[in-house]
Picture 1 (tube, one colour):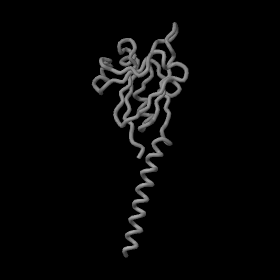
Picture 2 (cartoon, rainbow, N blue to C red; picture 1 turned 120 degrees about the vertical axis):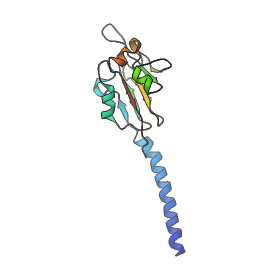
Picture 3 (cartoon, helix red, strand yellow; picture 1 turned 30 degrees about the horizontal axis):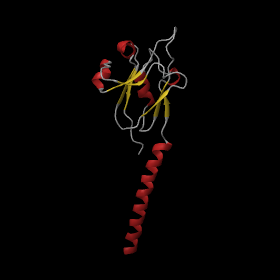
Picture 4 (cartoon, rainbow, N blue to C red; picture 1 turned 90 degrees about the horizontal axis):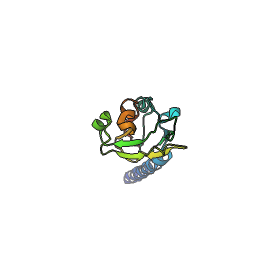
Length: 148
């Protein structure tokens, strides 16, 4: 009888370490790279809140790629800010917002933002004093889930 419990204890400990190892490996293996807006990229007039709902779930360590044309005579400038909370997000309030992508960083292959923590991220375009956010629908939020 003692042998059965010792064997069961060993397999429980072994299973625990196997699951722990699997979770740590899966965080890097299954992290996705997601182009914000899909083929539309980061542009005025596209509903990013709807896009985020349809693209979910997002996970910790996923990478968001923001692509947008640098400003020129035929395009509007865009940027990416993180705002602190839902009220600021809803109001497109850029006071104390953190710039994560300036008007030049979205060109070419764009720039990457890693969802490194399990928290809510509120993204907005900061151009034209929040006009792109409020009227141009250039805002969305995500709360990445743990993979395991």
